[in-house]
Amino acid sequence: MEHIKINKTDSLAIERTKLANERTFLAYFRTFIVFLSSGIAIFKIEVLNNLKLLGSFLIIIALIVLFIGIARFLYVKTKINKYYN
Image (cartoon, rainbow, N blue to C red; front, side):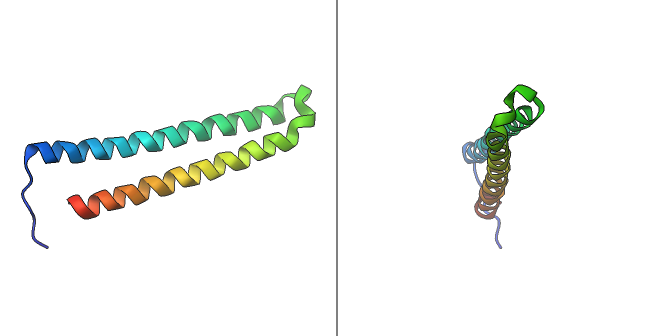
């Protein structure tokens, strides 16, 4: 495949797009951490024994959020690399 020369403005725009993708992944990761820690806290605090179902739900949601975040990050990264490298 032939390499196309891009100007500095376009190069910087591509870098901004890559950084935006990383920031979006970190937002998913922060959300994962909050759900996971909340679910674990419900299991550890004895006063909240009647909320164990909610704790389980939060842990499951945390794993789903992490999976979606990783999948989206890799998908967008692949698309960026495919069109701009």
